[in-house]
Image 1 (cartoon, rainbow over the protein chains, first blue to last red):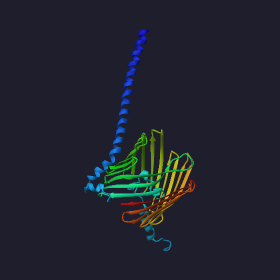
Image 2 (spheres, one colour):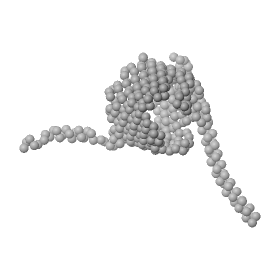
Image 3 (cartoon, chains in turn yellow, green):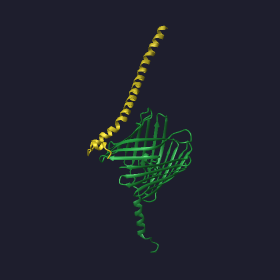
Image 4 (cartoon, each protein chain N blue to C red):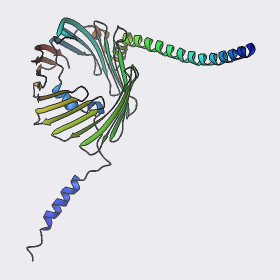
Length: 72
Length: 309
């Protein structure tokens, strides 16, 4: 009887480990996607306006740097 | 005997007119995008009213690229629980950069308190457009972003939207006759566990535009704009929420004259507003805004100057 209980216990832990593996990969994926979205938000927040300025300064006809900074 | 025969020319003219009016159902025009269905009414009835002083300076560096500097000083309304409106005097400076290309449009504005307002519109192919729009702040959980994919067909448009907080939406609008277009939308908001479906229709002719929209969130919106002449148009709008039993109706006028544009409206909430944009000189515009809310006893007056295109 004790051996049966022990076998049952082993079976359960086997299934449990597979299920927990699946859960942990889903969790990992969710964590990574949340981390990626957070980093993307910070990058967009700081980098969007400089990106627009860089694209604009490289468009034809190329404006001068002094035109960017002067108020006239 | 000769008197009973009807003149053949009269019948021939009627037939000609009938042939001209016959609609070519395979060649209908492309409809207005679904979110712009109330465009004329919104332009006339909801100008950008503000309170305080506003100064905008737009400097173009070349045809496609421009920078903008904007200053605002005035009271800002703070949402409050009581019926009294609480206003706090604030001032901010906003720096912006715009890049306009036929295929790519980038628009960014950043405020002194760190809030970024960004819009991107990119034509991926002739018919497919990607639009994205984001308001980012330094405070956590207060930023939103939304992206749309628009497909423009011969006489229909379809759009798919993705937003943060697991917001998904799709809408479709089809031209049914040269004057009438009908459309529908569905959306699902994961964070608030809400979903909804809506239908809209728009009938336009040279002189008038009538639109109607119903949504399962309880909103019914109808609008009618009549172009009385080249310079004058009158608009009216009716909004009813059958869940919260809220009704608002407004009437307004829009005068587009050579040197100025004057818009005024009166509301069923006891609110009257007017907005004047006067062109003083090439590239110099003077703006006056007034809004009087008789029910809440809230009086807002604003003035400003816009320099540049």
